Image 1 (cartoon, rainbow, N blue to C red):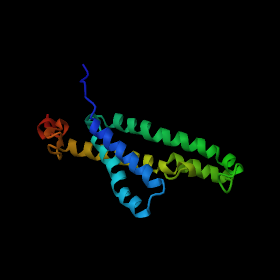
Image 2 (cartoon, one colour):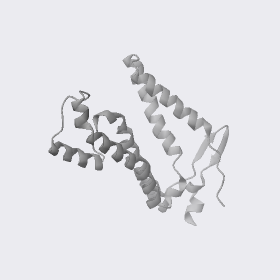
Image 3 (tube, rainbow, N blue to C red):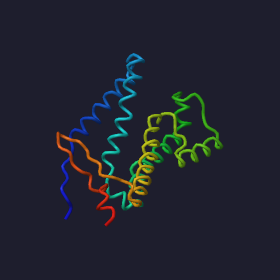
Image 4 (spheres, helix red, strand yellow):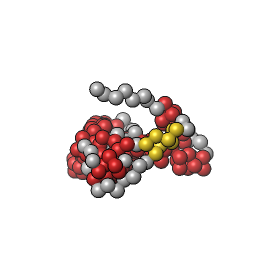
Length: 175
């Protein structure tokens, strides 16, 4: 029977605050404020993503990598290709300055599939590229350390109570 996990609303609130900071930063606030908020918002998003990483992916790496690729890679590729195919239409509408040649489109397609570049109007998708590789890298590194009994108990503080993350328990790892 599946365990009923209660959603941690504090993480939703933290993500909401980061989103507000991002909107304020991109809405024309003074540059020094935007730079300061940039020091907080993106690391916070990555930190929250790490907290929400399921422990089961340390034992089932293939499933974890597949889930991250499905959740981050597929939307990135899908929307980047759609916007790439519309690029010359956008140029005709004077949204972009220049059109792409077939050769440039081919290069862009390769860069999209390898997550080494994207389309102009999707500039914020850099986050998906970074989060994809950070998530997959974290799964691989933590799984590797767990298999070699190099992880120790990690306690996450929340609401005044320390609760152990059982997947990192060396006693359980050895079993």
